[in-house]
Image: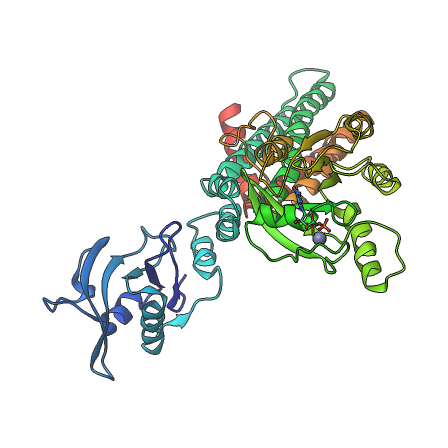
Length: 461
Ligand code: GDP
Ligand code: ZN
């Protein structure tokens, strides 16, 4: 396939200072030659593939040097997009990088759409669909852990798992085919059902395992929706500020002054929290405050995690007890704030109401207990240091939908076996499972199944 030549700024991960203008396409090297000047006068079209060259980007119209650069020339097919690729490394910051990009664009390249390099890599067969999506996730990854998951997917962890499952399904389909055409035993029907049953149960279990990682995957990708609740003045905004290390929420001494719901994103030991500060849940006549309260209730329902604050310096109120009731079924941490002040709260009652939930005494003001709090949050979501390195996390909405669909059809297989349906009916559902799994990695060509069946058939018998 041939496409036009695209260009965009791509900054490598972890190297913020350097800007790279990347070109990909048939005319990548030609266009680069129009703007590049080497001190020795050499042309990029003459240099060997995968080599780096020093020189200047030169604006021929204005007859002036724009930027000192290092240019990498990579000829197809050994490139990310499987097209000719030129990377212009600019050291002069974003402004200079932008000027280089503009110059490249005015010399025949087209500005790449977001993800277009990756799309080409997929279209040119360099990577499969789940890997392509992993690249997108990588760009959006919010914490190191999320980055690792995306990287893992990029390395093809999920793809490998899916491929293995599909291979297993193919084998049983081929075997069933053989059994039907060359029945060696009288009870061939019973035998094939038995084989299908085993395989279907195995595939079902594996798909379920993958789907179980989806929640964790979602957390890593989108952040854990975290609601900070408590009655006015317990220190919600202060806690939020302390967690964010910024001062975006308004902190005042007047109860109930946090009017709006503020969202913040923080990284607590690898757990991305999407923090939501609330105006406190309480009955009130104040209209402005009421909006906040209604939002708070709604948020409590939507939250993945609730941080519930109490005041160490005050006795428990009916409002506090009501909140304990409201968060009963939520994943929550009870935070007893202001331990720098004299104790007035009954900690025994707090522990009783907490009903097994973690109770962490802190002083946000004096930064006491914050370590313990972060530890508690992290341990809730990464208990026992989940094998981040080996697990294939499913984080992508499309993958999740397809896995659910595959699960349905493999359940149909099991139902069919249970109801002693004819084997060719069961085969249809099993094939559907195989196809749906294939969609995850962008393979669902019926011909492949036929080829595989045929080759196995010949080998087996
Ligand atoms: P909110 O209404 O729940 O958001 O509470 P704020 O965060 O606005 O805090 C209310 C007041 O309590 C402010 O004056 C804070 O400075 C104060 N405060 C917050 N945390 C602590 C703490 O740990 N110790 C003490 N002594 N005061 C605190
Ligand atoms: Zn507040």
